[in-house]
Image (cartoon, rainbow, N blue to C red):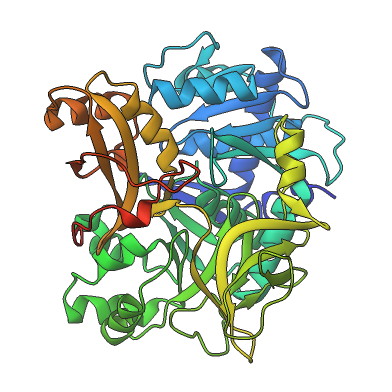
Length: 484
């Protein structure tokens, strides 16, 4: 089987049922099926064939779902690009994935052919809605999600039909997602959280979904009141924002909600407790990665233990190992190693990186955790210095390399500082090579890097602390306090 077989539970089996709301328009599953069939015909006419990569650089929209479904049906490999990325970051993905085309309505400098959603939709209107024939098995790649892992340049994690399918089936079973749910999705579809969890949970369960272009704090209460969802996926930043609502509004929202889920970054215990007091719901926290999607989850029916990510999901095996690859006792910190049907097929065209990512068939996550005697896992940190800000991964090396390209900067080290709203934010320590104007440096960062990667501060230091091997010791950098 492949993803089409799972999606057909809704696209065919519930074709007359309302599927999607977006910007006031309503579509049935049958209409979504027909739209994507016609678009798949457009892709075929434009020369795309099974195995080709198609990059998509769009904010959440109806057309993005059409494109994704058309890719799945045609055997194309869907390559979403973070809408906050700029030319520098986008160019790297183009060079690595070698897509046949880019779908976007933004101005992007590239040699790759650019197709606009509006042009595709107009062309698709004249196409028959017969589904293309693509004979795929579950091991066929469905998407490439770009993630830097722990160090170095961005790598493409290849996720197969089986990876996505096993993840969706687990979430439906473990979180009791069904056709009776009303699902409010505000997460970006370019992220595996919005795509692999959100879109797939909707398509397989056949629930009714309202898609938002983005989460907007000022409109959140109105969206909830109008749609009255039972299911909501968020990141810690969103839940911090929701704590700003008054008690009466929060209790009303909680009265029709069934499940709030949080992921993409650690959820502070205080936020979980404040949310439970305000909304009358205990947020379900889980643990996933771009390379693996969902690995662990607090139980739906059991204790959702604050500060933990619960247990490995069905079919997922987890080990906590020390540096010598020996199991660690309960309560002691080890690195998480994972094996299961959710684990990605490898890094796109990077055989050495793929080999290095696995030991005895287990994926090395780089995440550190402890396990309680009754099986709950608690994340304690990362082997790398990865920063997670508002659910987005920030890899300091990328920012450091850009800063060191600037003539006024000799050296740079980027670290994450705690921030109440975003979890962490990047801060740059720089050794000046000339007169340093932080405002000008920030402006250059804004022109070349995604907004969430821009350092909140530029702290000038005489030198960066290093060990005997010349490696920067970031923990010895001068403390500057909390960022927010």
